[in-house]
Amino acid sequence: MGIMLSGIGVSRGVVVGQAVRVDRGHPIIEATRIGPKEVPRELGRLDDGRDRLVADLEKARRRLAQQDAPGIEELVSLIGVQIGFLGNSRLMRMSRTHIEEGLMSAPAAVSASMAQIEEVYAKMTDPYLAARFEDIDALGGRLLDIMLDRDGAIGQLPEHAVLVAHEITPADTAWLEPGQVAAIAAETGGLQGHVAILARALAIPAVLGVHGLLEQVETGDQILVDGAGQVVVQPDADQQAKGKAAAMAFSERLERLRANADEPAYSLDQVYYNLQANIELPQEVPRAVNWGANGIGLLRTEFLFLERRNSPSEEEQTEILSSIVKQLGGRPVTIRTLDVGGEKVLPGYGELDQDAENPALGLRAIRLSLRNEEPFRAQIRAILRASRHGPVRLLFPMVATMLEITHLRGLVEEERARLVDEGLDIAMPPLGIMIEVPAAALSADLLAKHVEFLSLGTNDLTQYTLAIDRTNEKVAHLYDHLNPAVLRLVQFSVAAAERAGIPITICGEMAGDPSLTRLLMGLGLTEFSMVPRSLPEVKEQICQSNRSQLMAEVAMLMAEGNREAIAGFVGNNELGLNGTNKS
Ligand code: PEP
Ligand code: MG
Image 1: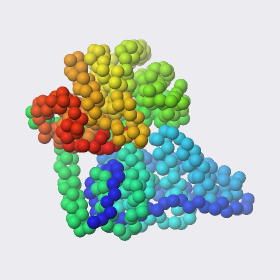
Image 2: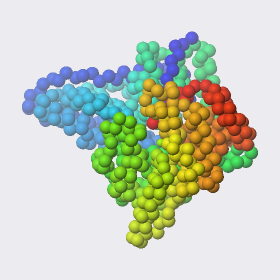
Image 3: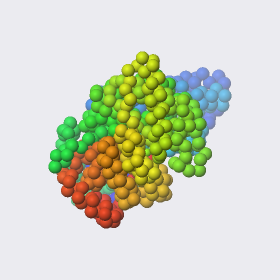
């Protein structure tokens, strides 16, 4: 029997292969002193190392750009960002200063800069920004490898290697020949990191967050990685045979699902289901379409504002949003206005409330936007302008009251009138609100009369209903979509939308979990928006189910209100969404 370890399954598939440890750990290079005369030589060494690194990245980018895999554009653009970063990054600037003023050798200067940058990132409370250190760290490590002529483990992989590491970074993936790495297992990382996204995009099975992994594995060990969340070190013959059979079944199933991507989703009793995609980046559009999305059910616009010094101009936003709308070639796009606040820092975006004790209950989403009206109006105008290129719906996050709706509608009407006065032909788009605050769910029947559509944000609805911070690991085990209180709010909102005669889409993570599809169908939902890759599996569930039968079964379960019975129905007795949540 091999050693079984579990972690977070972030990219599905089963592989039995040979482990290759990536032992990074950048050694602290002693700050060898150099004489002032050696400064130009060391500066040259730094620039030369950077140039070789950029050349490597360029090569990887070209190679990847030729691949035809969903999501590959995202990886290609990520490498582009890394190339840009090496131009005049803090890492390069600090390293130069260390050479010139601290009289350090180039490797020592890079090592010292890395340590300083790490200190800055360690203090960041925003997990998204804190995670960016991984990327910088990997680039710095690779720069050191190049300057010191070290060939890391990644340089000499055997075929079908399973990479095993404390941490795999997106920069690491740039060196990999596609097809050469069969699977990834790492001690750190989670569902949302870039590695997870890239592993999914490249269809490399991956399990992250495997505690104690490196204590158990040596390079050359046989290892089985099951992307559902299991790693087996030195599997015995029986485990290997089962792993290989599962790998075969998985790839056959994937092929079959992919072949059906363009088929519409009908339940057995011929009810049509509208399946759309949630995207966070423009590069995801082709992937969404490839996986069979009928449109974008949730475009999170945070990407326009993050990682920059100031807010994007109205023109810039218009251009990016318009290009997304155009790319969709007539499929509808639901664009949600900015949803940030609390601890997320947006430099140059007016008033923020970073020190609030309960940021999730503070100046977040629409509350923040209404407090900073000028940039908000600019975003609305950009969305209105983009709506000239295709069907656009305008969605507001975290709305709780009727007053907010009235106010928001007034703002949109004013901005539209302004654009019309400028000679633009812009119709009023359908306006909708996220139902993600219990107050909104409980008054969904009242609010529904004043909007054209509703979007169920079950990620936040669960957090606010159960008073469980969705980003707090200590209470993650209590974050439970199946709690009857959450499901009652879903049920009530669906009924409210139906009575008002408006559509309701579920766009929280629940929508993309195929184990919950039957439950959601039974609650009456017919519009789902989810991460693109979940589309085929959710569709498969729909096509194999009978809606009216599910509605009758779920009505009984809901009347009973027994969580365990509901969990039994979905075949998932764990709390929460496969024990994980998404922030
Ligand atoms: C939600 O809360 O369910 C949702 C879709 O919004 P976000 O995850 O962006 O907060
Ligand atoms: Mg939300």
